[in-house]
Image 1: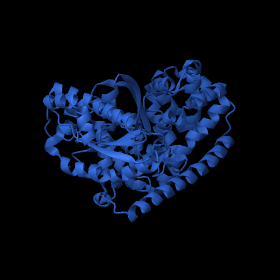
Image 2: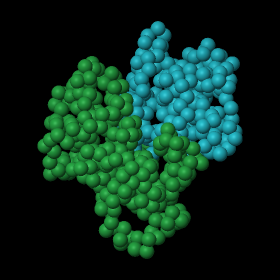
Image 3: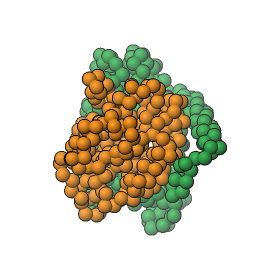
Image 4: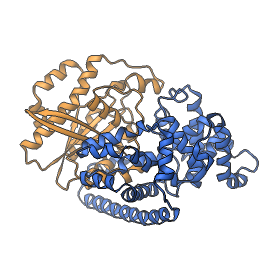
Length: 213
Length: 304
């Protein structure tokens, strides 16, 4: 949906920087980054689509040929979570006809947990331990909504960025070791820094992922 | 014709008002006989108002412009009013992303009420119908028209794009929908607006093609999809030479008959509509298949 932070996540991922005044996307944007997965360099192309409902007519023609999808919602706005199923329908319907596997990602933002996760990625993946990736829309978004800012430490920011990469790598690893035919969809509850205003609990998001997985 | 040479900065408010009035004067006479139409719209509290969507975009409109950079800016307040008023004025369109940028550019030179009429003039009396509607069909069709024109006017570039599998609509959709106000140098954008308000929507194609032509040789050097696409994403930033672009748009690219544009628009609009129906059919078919098996996410749409 609109304003959940899709472009911000993409910018984080490709530029490794947080973009405070991120303009909204018209149509489709695009980003690339080369990541290394088990010694192999993989060029990821990520398409970033406009969130407003009417742009679906335009963006869904770009679903074809996708190897996977990231579905993003805003943990502080329940409506964005409620719309996931309709986005999922489009994703399943218009991407690769093969089964779509579903995974929810919960990444708690402490440096320690991040370290643990990095050490045991395969286990996390195979057990589908949910990991929520946070993009750190801290001061700007919070400021915009008129509530008090929740400061994030710089270390957690970095962890958040890296975790997205890790998760994507995990997905790729799984893809190649597996049949290689399945598309992967990740669910991302964005704006983890606004945990105090959380409107969608991690548990229900996990349930959504499990039920659709 | 004179406007193609550019409107001096200080005259822009008057000239734009005049050009807007020329397009919507007759409508305004009808709707705004007592001069209170706009203020009534602003005060109206319509339940259908897409307030949330508008609020989400206010600071994402022209984030780098001092009039629109924070909620306390005068421009943001005016932008909110114009967008709310427009969505009530034209509920079939309501609020479409892109209109916020159009309205914001209008507000750079016009008072709030005139900016509202400028949006009316552009959306309803300059662009084809359904440009900003809920299906965006006309704006999608225009990207295909553009593609056809590209193949005719810049055939080498067109072949290069075809060979690399580059879909120019990824770039041009934004140019058209936001009327070149996104990522285009201000002087160039304002010049496009000058000419568009004066001459109509054909200008969108002229400048788009001029952009491509001005960097054609550079793009032809790029070997593959990724390098081309990364170039296209930022190429509009470099369109500083208004004179050169205008010269290309109005001389080098001629002839540019409106009759042809209209014909291509009709053909492509038809195709887009057909595809849309097909996609909807697939979607509906898929949903009904899924409804036959217990659908775990069926209830999560409740709040939408």
